[in-house]
Image (cartoon, rainbow, N blue to C red; front, side, top):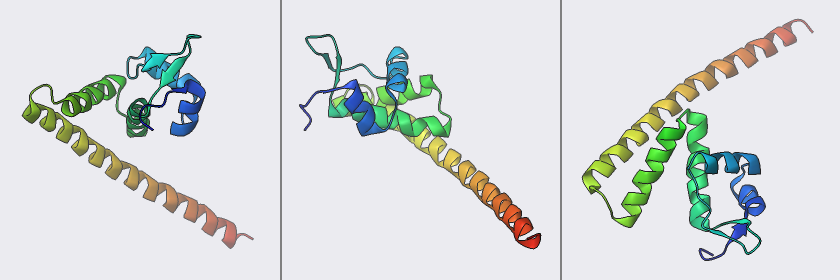
Length: 128
């Protein structure tokens, strides 16, 4: 499966992002299509989709494009075995910690939103 190339439409469908969003991430330098077809169409591989999935998961947690770019570089260096491994792992741990913190914040916001929805339901029930 790794060697298969797909066009942007299939890549978008597989990852659950719009074509427009993928193009935006390309312009931001987060993802570079692995190849181009003879007709000049962007072609993506499974590793390209993995990069898009990382970005997709970072976005709702409020990470910036620069942070996304930095994390992808860390992951690339760890995979390739380049760079100072200790320093890379430290940076990766920082992102993991930030993600956990943001997940906690979202959980608290969700609990508050659920409480509000329940409160409105209670009012509806009371006045029916």
